[in-house]
Image 1 (tube, rainbow, N blue to C red):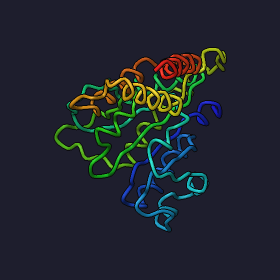
Image 2 (image 1 turned 30 degrees about the vertical axis):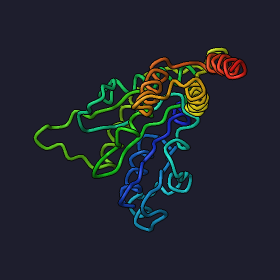
Image 3 (image 1 turned 60 degrees about the horizontal axis):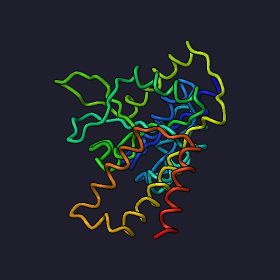
Image 4 (image 1 turned 135 degrees about the vertical axis):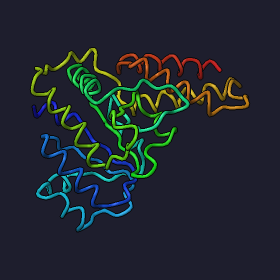
Length: 241
């Protein structure tokens, strides 16, 4: 169980109300989860967060605060974003139970998982969702879809707890160690340099090209060894140029 929970991080993005941070910590602790990251919270630390944590003070004390999603998920190999709305771009979307199965498989393969929760009012924007491999949507009542942040955390944490109680986890072979998001970002930056140096990015919408390349890389789920190989290829191209 500890191997499972230590490799799952819940990431709260720009939380407006500190009480929601405390309530989320409480929801996590009841399900045995303890890895919490906060991306630019509006108010933190806060007495209200501590009060709403109701004994989950250790989760708050161990929470890390970062200034960007990129830094929050840099070590993760699988990033799942929560969403309540339909999006123009087509992402794979799962209910919490199916998402928990993905998390289990990732950790069995030696990966580390980040689950992103957006702002109370607006959630995650499209650019932030572009950092996610897949999405989670809780199947709420369409006539009343308002779900508190901590309640969403509780639902997903419960499904993770459920599957962790019914499955056996095994360490994976280092040869198949999955690439972290930080590794993938570094590759995308080098690829960006190559596209600029070759003139490929002399297009009307360079940002769209980068967006689709990121989606391609996320779908591929590369290993660290494969990322290093691609780095070598790009370095050779740049040297030749």
